[in-house]
Image 1: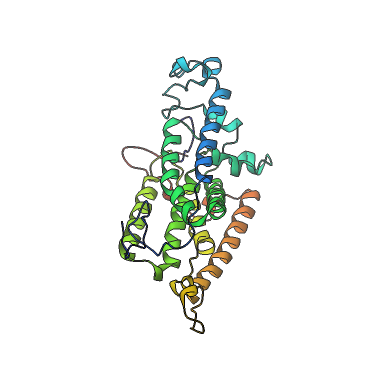
Image 2: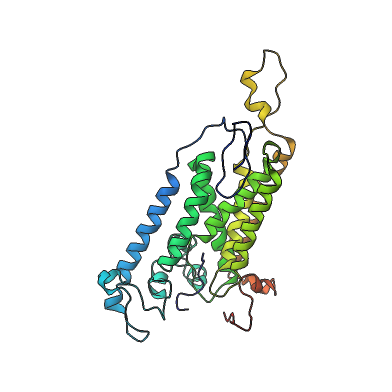
Length: 324
């Protein structure tokens, strides 16, 4: 495909519970609930960027006609590239490359490290954009309501960066765009948040199984051709570690300390294993990002250090081949 490697990207507790969008576990809800505004702003920003990309693309003027005529010509310069070139109803790969798509050559030899961030805000087409924005709404709004915009925003952006770094290390002859790495980071953070706050949840097994199945299905889709599963994996691992660091919840005994009689013993805010997870998460994040960025800007190819890792992004079958 001309657009290169793309990212496709009710529990109860005595009245003190709330529902998670993708799981069935509950927790005491006397913590502050934030109003979600950052995630809707991210959605608006992604849509606005896509409109700008299509305006710059200007298919009626720039299409050579070799792949067919522009789609939805009534949109004028916002019309889409021919479906033979881009079946996702979007711009050309040249436009995406010009406006900040992830490309190893330009990052390493062109001193354009900013592409590690800009690629997160670009999408290959309407279908790609719609799939990612629906996922962002369903996952992100709930997390922002629970943990606030600062923590969720950091997880989203740092996970997107982590996905870009791993993608650039292993995919060096194609471009990649999309917010899927950041979205997988939010999924990873949900999983680590469940693990680090394990003792305060009910329906733990159902919640864990649900999240693991959702994550496994989405990662399995990534082995199809033209899907950048390295961005998914890098984003997921980054978000998973960030969840241990940023999404700790206090224990019930500490939350209800104000209702205890004077002189009553008060439990610690966090359990020892939560602090252990926090320390491990911080160390692995620092080491992971440092090693990844150093390898990337030294121009190393991740496939030289892992001969089988290419199967994580595409598994060849009799129906398709993976190519580059």
